[in-house]
Length: 183
Image (cartoon, rainbow, N blue to C red; front, side, top):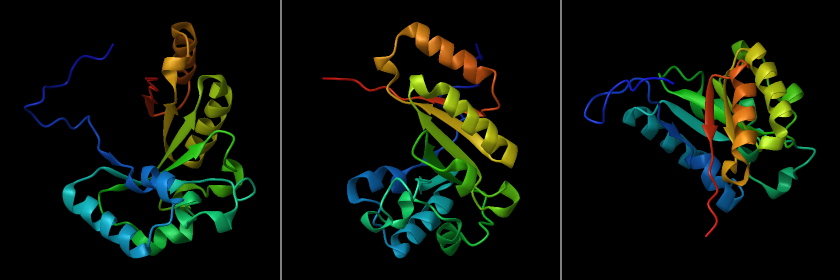
């Protein structure tokens, strides 16, 4: 177990702020954001000291109808670069890729050719082997990787412990558990 690195009254360099406005908000409006809105959010995040800005998903264009969604459902390299250029700021660019809903082997460039810094791989416990395959592939391309385990409250503690052990043996940089609480 990692020891606490500080308290709430001091700067914690080990804590990073991720703005997921476009990705989370896109779930409500089918990712139909104007370039002007995304550009202003990008500039605001830089001024605010946000560490990572998540633009949206890298969803499969074979699984999802491109005409039914805005471009941030797919996060093409050219669309991100139209907003950030070469992103000479300190803020890093992130996207999310869901296990089984993206073409990770064809939709990601090697990191040195991409403005994206981090990929958050989202999965459920039963998808852990596929998530680790994605993490390793993306890590080998040069990206920072995060694994979001969704709906952990629906899994048993043994399953979660096994999944975390699998991730601990992988190249993943960050692990995040998402709780779904039923009311």
